[in-house]
Image 1 (cartoon, rainbow, N blue to C red):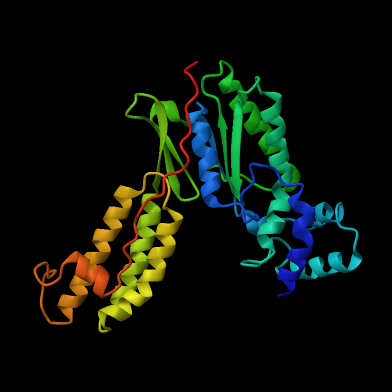
Image 2 (image 1 turned 180 degrees about the horizontal axis):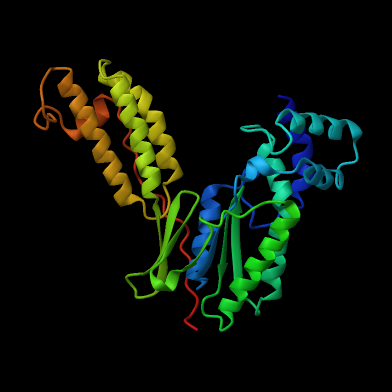
Length: 322
């Protein structure tokens, strides 16, 4: 409650300072908007990608640097004292794990990174064409550079160098093993916010982008559901469905954009088969009961989650080839 009250005070003050490419836990901003921004950048021929992974970011935030950034905008001793107590309770470094105010503090801490990228974006602009785009959601950051620009290789190195310089000031380290440069024109892909991004040709022969849930995300979901089926093996099917429906609904709503249909089909079939096995097991029988129950009956009568529709993002027209 205290963190929530402090967040209400600080958020409007710093929201005015935050940049367009920052999406993490900000009012009226969503993960889907961040995904859309990255997808548009790829369609606009930004095919050289720096996929940045910060090393234990939330655990390594330096309190002195963070407090200095806050005090630049907040001239209230009581607020600052309260913030110090909250940070001190989490240890000598880092922000409170799971704290209501932690995402806001994280955005304040990394705002200089966003400002640097905005300056780089404007410095390299050519009329309405931008050479650089970026999107950040908390500690998840991707930088995209125009692959058709004749100095793109130099530009990628320059932006990465500036990024490292800013991170050194914040005492934040890059995870060298997971941070990598990706060339989408060579069939490579990268992950952002649980989605995989691939550059593909559309049916009209133009370059577009395919966005799919990561296999890792799907595996994590099925593992979680499998544990529920195992633990409640002796329970009625409607009880199991009552437990898995909220999990399915939340996961599907998160990944309901892009090109998730094939993944959704796999999940839907997997869950239905598990329910069928559960129903047959309750009758001491093997198999899936294909002749006993139709899929429609399972979803309608037992109430199993069935809304796997994909909402396509706003279509973006590709720029002319250069």
